[in-house]
Length: 414
Image (cartoon, rainbow, N blue to C red; front, side):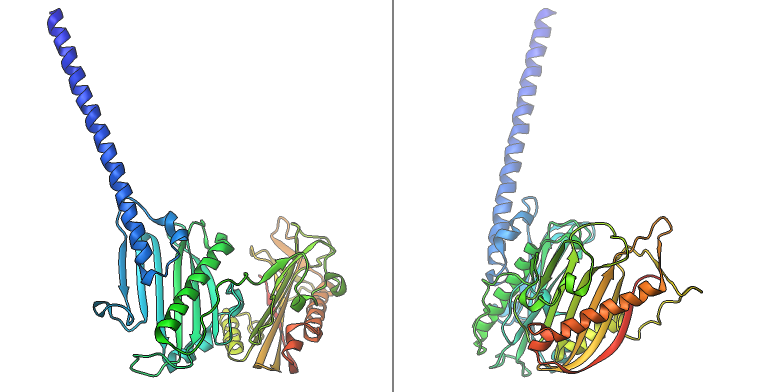
């Protein structure tokens, strides 16, 4: 019996050793397979979308457990990859429940006259493109939530003086659209560095089109520092935004704004650096924006669509004592004052908005006495007047004239 038990133990040991060897072999095979798959995916990333993708910034999204899916077309690619676009490229990884785990999209498209008109009417404010752009180019960046994580995008429109070759209809302008994955949990947390990568990718694609099409303009430089400029003091274009001179909250302030003059748009902003609501409902935030020419109509239309243009709403109802009740919406309440001018760039709009410090309390509402509500209007008008009159500010640099006040917009919950 003892001999049988010994042989049985030896058999178990042999079987266990074999299983351990098999498991170890499978682990090595699996690890090697993942490494090979990731290497293949990285090679694919390097050559995808005409080799214009930011490989180093996208490495962290490249998996080793599944192959990338590449769809690439365009009139400047191989004959079997033709499409109406100059470049139309999508690269994705991982099959998520509703969408890929990570997605890259790049498109370069020649715009015909009707598309140009539509783009001019609805184009976003150019100031959020984190690179200075030359005349004949304008752009923007943005972010949005995905099922898992977020995405950052860039849009860039470029004029081509010599036109775009190989088009069935004349075209002197092309549009670049870029979407890249971000590791931020939500669109509100996408860092400025991600916006800069998306913008740089759009510029690289634009320069590729400029070179391939020989469209008669220099390449757009990519070594520019980000804008708007942020710091403890305003830029020269925003130096008019002096909290002491304007009688704003006696707190520490931080500022952002244009570091260089652009005839088409201008932007300045300032706000206190602390948290909480200082007593007396002082102004704790100011923004000023101007749009000129083709940008003016689009900006005004966007605000009108959102209900934030003059005349969109009647003034807030008042209590018998003349006070106004403002409810907590989760967003800072603002009072915006609009004006219209004729400037060097053409018909222009100006919008100055102030943010007062309100404490909502347990009832989630703030009662603004009549004299305080009037002071809000006085503060907004003082900021607008100072903005319009500042020697180094955007309106004076643009030689704005024939200015007309259009009215206030209360952006708060009643």
